[in-house]
Image (cartoon, rainbow, N blue to C red; front, side, top):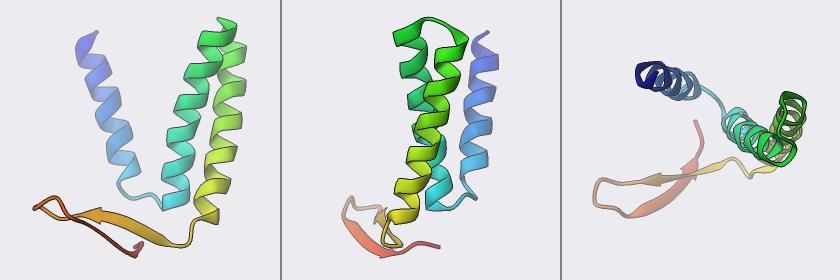
Length: 84
């Protein structure tokens, strides 16, 4: 079971590596929305609705971003530059 979860997490992380900021935001918010929906309702339908609402909201927030990303240098300092 632990190996299955690890593979699932690595798959999601690998899939997000090539996504745009809006897609990354949508995926992250969908996961959070699904978790919240599952906890509050206790069923799969609530999780699906939460994931949908979180995904749409995250995508819209990502698209509304100014096109800049925050990057962290190896020394820990943060700088802002255009997203790829």
